[in-house]
Length: 395
Length: 169
Image (cartoon, rainbow over the protein chains, first blue to last red):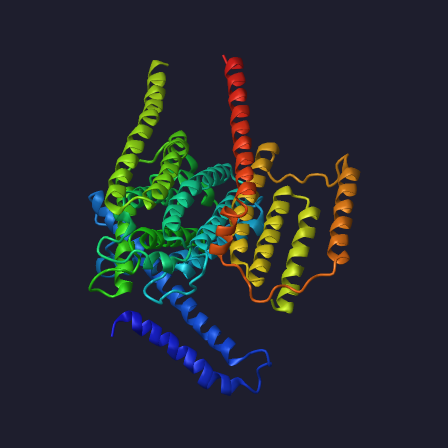
């Protein structure tokens, strides 16, 4: 019996228990509008919510550990290795530290908005997990509008970042907040367009339908030219959207102390930290769903496949952090508006064009068109950087 | 939609809207306006229109609210300074708002409302097909308008930049 079935069995057992045990027990005290069907729906929702609330933070805890280990190794260090075997208890020690630290609010800051910002950033990053299919039938809510729901909710975090920067009444926080908002708003556009490419080919916004459309050995969309380019755009935009290195300007230590969360301490800072990892992980799950066939894969059960794919993507993010230097502000904006956005629009065009061509010629035409666009777009972007550098040297 | 749920949401929306116009700090006003947007999205969910709800969050909270905040930041250099409630042209706003209220109220109470079509909630696919088949001309007109606005904004920005370059050295 594979794990997928175990989870579904647990869910069915809970629903059955709600109908057969809980309802007869509580029937005398419950108001009339609570029917057995509603109670069953509620039980099923509780199981989904609890699984997400247990698994996601647990994974996140060990992502912080894994990131420190990987980046440490890349920088010829050991990473955490004092608390527990291989530092495995380090996340718990960190959590205790966060929870016991003093909570400081700037004297002239805006207390209420300062308090609400970490709450508002954490809620949407957890809500988006509702539409991620962890396996066949292992989805909290198979919405008709799954991808749109994900994108809409992740755009709310921008607001929380702004609130944090503004409420701290600190110029570093404020500058960091403004930078973050400008960056997140700009990178959202290529991110959405890259997701739209997949939605367009599948003809559905439901994440389950998208996974179902990627059956077969080479069925993953990343094996199509438009899928590969859409994935690369998505990867770049998602790294920027999650404020991760090399696009971590909003919290660039060398210029802005810690950016929008400079004035946060204790668990409030911890919530920003949590939200960053939650959203990076959620974006990786979405990328695995959109481009790598979600839970589809041979031999192993589905939930192992999607976790494997997601962790490979997360590992790529760690590699980015360990290898790339931080980009400059003008490079950051130029990269999305002058490079990613035109490339994303071309990908939409190619995905539409190859839909009407037979598979093999379509693959070749798509690959040629997109690679050509890629290099054509590189030319002006490169010249801009070179000319600027030359100007600076002359001066 | 459950009636009590609607009453609860309506209370939240109306009180946030009142706060949006009465709070002294403009940033607080925008933040309570965002509560109004989110509450409206929740009403759409209750009306079984999840697509409209998601678009409401994506456009109003994710884009328009951010735009408002940016505009405030650019216009008001001093952060968080309370601003006067009433400007010189308050009577114009009062007349326009009352006229709009009268028109909307007349429209809402004047017509005999037909019963809502039962169990015919269009899914997203039907919405998309209708938008791009039957209503493709208005759709294209809207995108043309947006493109024109975008080109206009860029043209204005380029002109400004040229001027500042000329005056800089």
